[in-house]
Length: 186
Image (cartoon, rainbow, N blue to C red; front, side, top):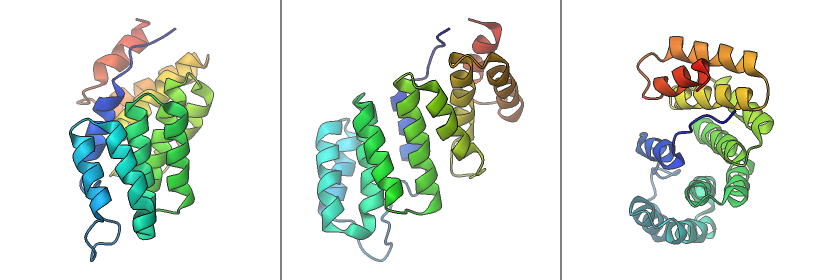
């Protein structure tokens, strides 16, 4: 059974607004111009140009490569180019970024897998993030998506249990109605 899904751009916009999302990995150096241009293009909704600029910044300052790879993934996800997005998120993780950025990349991988209908893989990626209890990660969206993926993968009892836990943990979440609809079988 397919459930209504929240638009990827809503999730990614929320992630973009988290403190430090566009911050430089090396705080005493200003971001390279290509990274700044990537930010501008991203905020303007020109994801192709943004991805090109973020890619260009990877070689310009290797210390910020993980963050640039993450944003390439976000751009590709917004373009519904899920395989490329997942690859960029994995490149981010391979560069051993700070813990929160690594968790955001795993959440991005989960989104790619969910949107590619690879629900079992998405569950594993989301669970990896949920185990960390990182306050900088939007646990409500990840928990909701994990529960929905469990249901879509044929593990309805587990999925419903997670959605009930989601409702209890995040009663004011903007996604609460989605959970209620899933639990009611709509």
